[in-house]
Length: 450
Image (cartoon, rainbow, N blue to C red; front, top):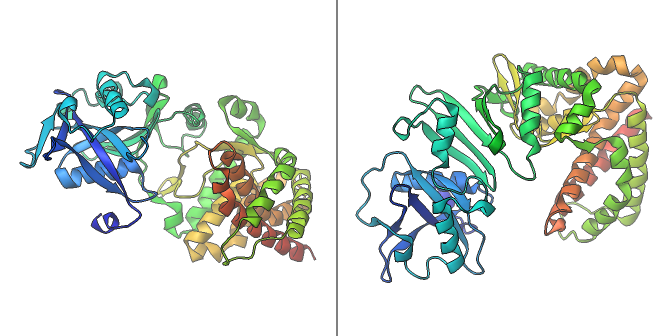
C-alpha cells in the first residue's frame, strides 16, 4: 500500500469514522481543534475497498463505508464510515469527538448537515445504506449472526447509492457475499434470482434474498477466474455452459425482457449505425495519440456500409437471438472442480449469442497466450451446438463474422451508455480502438471468404 500512496495521481480523502454507540467521530489533535483522519486513494481504485483496508491496516479498526459525500467546491472527497466490531486500544494521538467539536474548516456546513442526517438515519438521498447500524440489520436478516459480538469478518469491496458489495466470513472460515443494487442496475436483482433458479449449476447459490434492499446473500465460489486458469478444458466447459443457458432461453425471451434485460439485437444495432458513426467521426477527428492511425472519413463510411452488410448476414444465418452476458470477461467466470460459475449479471442483454462468446474469447486471448493460440478451435467448439439452427455454410460464415461484429457491438454499447453521462467523449478512446479492431476483423473475414 505504501508504494501506491506515493503515487502522484492519488487523491486525499477526509474520513468521518463514526462510533455507533456514542455517535462520535474518530479524530486526531490539531491546533484549532480535533481534525478528521485522512487517507490517500489511488486513481481508479475502488474507494470503499481501499479506504476500509487502509483504516484497518493503519488504525486496527474494521469499518464499512456508509457514503461518499457529494463534493463541495474545493473541498475534495469526504467518506463516512461506521466502525464495526470490538474497539481495540487506540493510539494516544487519536480520540473521539462530537461533530460540533471538530475544527471548523474540516467539514463544510452542508457536509456537517449530511453527517448528522446519516447518524439519524435520515440521509435517504444517499441511499438505503447511508445510515449507522444497517450492517446489524443485514446480519439479523441472514439469520446466521444474531449479534455484533458474533459478527463475522466483513470485507467491503464497493459502495454507492443503494449499492453495496461485501463478503462475510465466519469463525470457521465459511464465506458468503452480500450484494445490493440500485439505479441503473436494479434489474440485476430480479435477473440474478431468475437465472439462479433456472441454472443452479452455473450461478452462485443464493442463501437469502432481501427484496426491500434489492439485495441477496450468496455462497462464495471456490475456484480460479477462468482468465487465470490457462486450461483449454475449463474454457471449453465455460463455452458449453454458455450455450446451454442460451439455448434454453431462446424460447423464453419475453421473461428476459420483462426482467429488464437490455435489447442489443442485431436489428437494433442496425438502427443505430447512422448516429453511432456520426459520433465515431468526431471521435476519430479528436484523436491526439500517434500510436495508431485514426480511421479517415472515407474509411469510416466504408466500415459503416460493411458493418450494415455483416449485420444483415449475421441475422440471416438462422441462429436465434437469446441471453447475453454483457460483462462476461474480467474474471466473471469462475472455474471450479464442478464446472464454470458465472458471476455479475448486471449487464444481461438479449441479442445474438455469438457476441457473448466472442467477448469472452477476446478477454481470454488477452489474458493467456494458450487461449490466443487456440481461438479457432474454441470458436468451433462453441459454434458446433448451433448446427441445428443454421446450415453449415451459414454457421461457418457467422463464426467468421463474429469477431468483427462483437468488436463493433462493444463500441456501440459503450457509446450508448456514454450518452447518459456528463462527458460522452470519455467513450471515444474505446470507440476508436474497437472500430479499428472491427475493421481488421472484417478484412480477415473477407480474406477467409476469398
